[in-house]
Length: 261
Ligand code: F6R
Image (cartoon, rainbow, N blue to C red; front, side, top):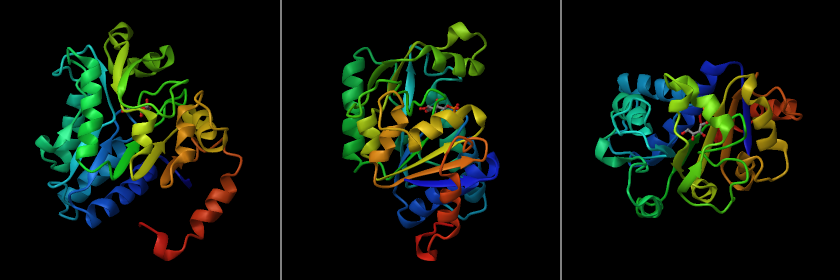
């Protein structure tokens, strides 16, 4: 796992965007795994600026969202289908026909989950998966005690996650109780992952993910099993990392040929 500690949230978005840009420049038809929530907004804004400047082109890329709420209408502004369309597809100039979000409205939710994993496999797998981390250590909506082998499936949102996401809704009671999420096994199948975290509220989860034992109690720790995982955090989110100086030293001395910026 590569840990990159940068000064602030803006730099987190800029540095992580460079990683995604390098994948898309190398492979214009790349398959992207798309997180929602606050964490990746700086990535999308940075990539959108480069698209507007004519430096990057996402028109041939495909995308698979990480997750979707179950039980809110497609047109709800906080459905992840709406968020992905508004924050990712339009600003990056992606082809909407190449971007999928799990179908949280399916009458057969189990079949929709199986279908989603099959669609990812049929697309050749995800080239780079963008992730955030919940304050309880979840990635996707794989809440604590999720199996490291899990595939896309329905999950019950933890009370802490519903509380954290209440800021997106008019009333906390409107936060859905369930979601369809890529599993930890699905996420681990991505060729590369880049996880971003900003702010002190993520410091404990980041430390557990990077330096804690492999444990389903911190689902993000599953990334310790991934061969190409990059974690980009600001100083506040890095505050509980015991080897922070080592990560800084490693990044500062990274061989030129390994750099993506
Ligand atoms: C979003 C997702 C979640 C979020 C996490 C952090 O698609 O799957 O794991 O990344 O809940 O949320 P924010 O970024 O809003 O703090």
